[in-house]
Image (cartoon, rainbow, N blue to C red; front, side):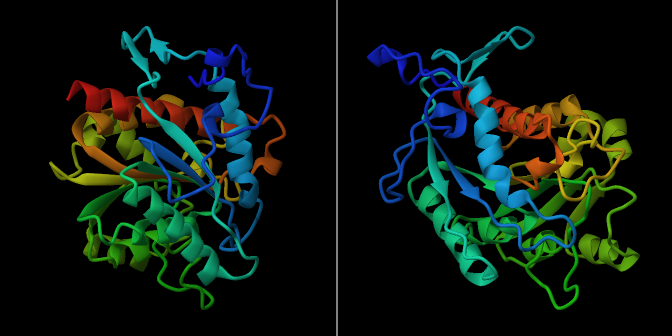
Length: 319
């Protein structure tokens, strides 16, 4: 998908050189972003309540993404009879937001500044976490961008108002999102029996505009049925927690939850979303590579992101 070294005669193979996302160009100057997509790492995991390690997620997902960097004409899908992410889609990697250890407010502010720089450049922000608290500054960065709807794909509701005095941890992001005036609603998909949220949390979420679906409910509806519940015309921000997937295929996360989605469950939802709605931002969080010596969790994350981007820009071209 990258192929940026071909013109100069270099092969730029996946295991050579710098592991930017998809082997795409690195842009250090955030005031000079000229791209359709800008990838930002958010290696912050001080919001975790149990197993840390998601700070290494951005690096692992970038490394895994080099696996999909062959070719310059895009990736051809014979089932869809379509090529995705050809050379006409400009993707750049901005590196990571600066994280200050133990300083949540400053770390989140730095992530917000990165997302705001991407939006100011007219590019689609793709943020790789880090724990799910990094979603809070991402959503806050959209406060000047008009109304958005949040699609959360996750095992956990993440709607705790405050726990042990913490309001900006990885159990709080959807509650913080629902409080924002520019967030018109949430569709929370994949939420299941070990969501770590009391009944009152579900009641609060629904009263604040959430539509909550479990894995089994989502499968019963099918991908089109799930996406059909999102209000027509909504501009959608997508947040994907890797623990939405079953740990049989994604063990590399701090809070694994059995009974999760498989690959095509999520992929087909994302493809349906790209066909029906404008996607305005993406984050993928909670990849903790040290819990998965096979590297398959990071590969899954990279593949989901690249395929989702392919769907988004194919739909834009077709529309």
